[in-house]
Length: 344
Image (cartoon, rainbow, N blue to C red; front, side):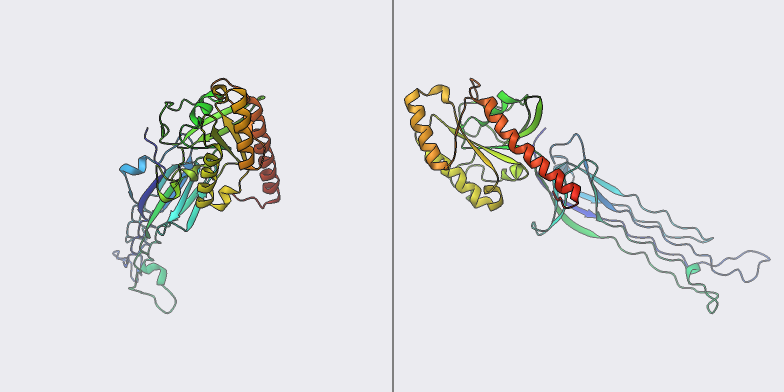
């Protein structure tokens, strides 16, 4: 299935049916009076987060969603039938954004969440509604309320606990395949990963979800390479794992390139907890490894984990460090939710 994380859709709720202006006419019954029924309500447009979806590809083939109009009222006090609702089913983690591409309407982060995007129009009143002690035979009936038409954007941000960052060929896909059951494409050329991949990682009997996004290069914020179009998929992560290719001769520059692109994309993303790991150490001798570790520690200003995704060296210790941060974030979120102040 092709991955699609952004879609533009056009929606319209149904208009309400018109009320009926009718009078009761039966033989041998005088002064029958008004008996016009109300119009039916128009259908609404809803969006719902469901399980089993991980892409917005369905909205590439259908972009227009129109709910049914309500039927008009009829004589003998018969109310028109209401129009059927339409439900847009989207993956968990989908944001609903207004046409200006800035205003957030809703953020669906849990299975079963539903939001009404366009409410159907109310049905018009029939003339029976206007009968009063001073107006015994009203001939007035209301038209139905028109539906709402709008354009919205659907933007998917994958739900993951940890996100992998790094230059192309830093070994992100190899690392993900080594620690989870995910099977991303792995090859010896840049930009092997073209779409985000998710994997469930197990460590000490506990699990968390890790996301691997396509590699960033210098100038990604200006559209170079694949740009920063996939960085949104790690915005929800509790911690970021920055992998640096240990076989590169420009360790410090490689590290600073990724940090600069994060800061250019979002200050909030750049401020997230981040662990730094020097990958592919199985291909380095002891002297080179020590030198490049010192260079990376100086550039990052913090500790550096030494790992090898292929050989498995240092991987478990790194996963434990990641989970410690994730567990702390989960506990904090649960505490805030218990106080009623948590927001996704």
